Length: 205
Image (cartoon, rainbow, N blue to C red; front, side, top):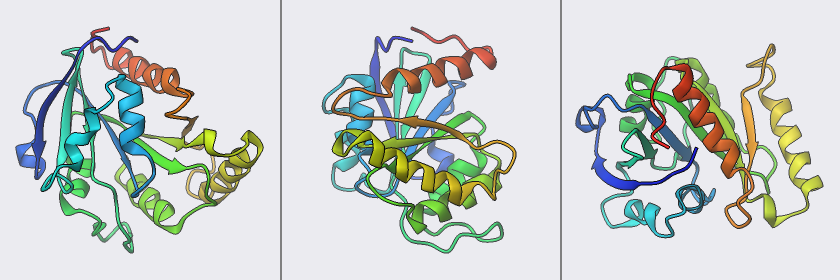
């Protein structure tokens, strides 16, 4: 897939105000400082695209970008600390929880994890909740260029071990990325292209 055209659509405060078009959504989320803005900019090759979410008043909003006139890239606010269970909505952001649990257009969530760190409780709690919603997702390990491949892989293996009890038969997909080198960019785009194809959407590029 080639990203040919990128347009900012809107910033939505809640599910009701999200775009009503039939375009499918691919959302990106992670905890603070995981490198989400850098990854989105590298993915679209638009240097300042994700800065929209950094403007005053935007940090709690769901930011929608139209890609190739065909699908939405959704930049979600980072999640905070929360006790997350199947019976309790994550209090990281109620609008985000509502979106992830109920958005019919949402085809896949890319959950960003810092590959420089051992498994963080906040990430594990979020994944446990997200898994309970049945929403399809892929784990995207960021900042792979910040340390050796051996150390990054060691942290990834620890993370896989932590989540194996939740998905004993098949773990979620994993992509290792670097916004600096571009590693993983094509893998993310391939997941998007394959998902669109499987759902009979046109890719637009």
